[in-house]
Amino acid sequence: MELIVEREDVWIASLEDKPGALGAKLAALAEAGADLDFVIARRSPEKPGTGVMFVTPLRGDAELKAASGIGFFAANRLHSICVEGENRRGLAGRVSEKLGAAGINIRGFSGAVIGKRFVLHIAFDTADLRDQAMRVIKEMT
Image (tube, rainbow, N blue to C red; front, side):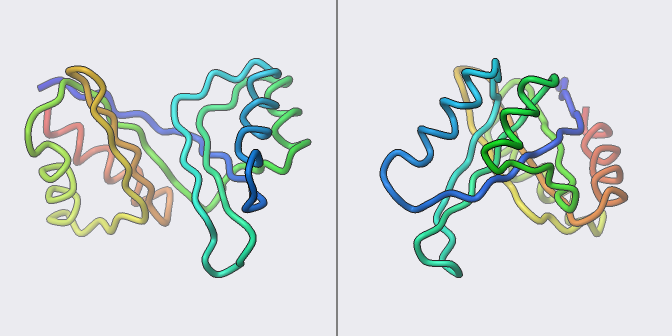
């Protein structure tokens, strides 16, 4: 089983919890040339009327300038990886089990299957845990 395991920089922005807020931020990024691989957005229950969005990747000066202009910042405390490969039943469970058996706590976990391929975005509290997780997952191949 071949797995692609890479570090990824995640960018975060707050959102107003109102119609069109997400679309406006995504449109601004697209106008700057961003071709996003992953977007997640949700309400912030601890701050009614607001939400938060996470995107990856942002590349190049134009994208970074546009992103910072609409409130994005690099998530320096969110150490994330992207894992991709051919989908197999139970693979997300096996990845999370392997990480747990290695004593690695997961901060965030998102996944999807597109056609015959899967993608996981996994976040950790520290760069050291992220690097350990990368080694553990690469050993699965």
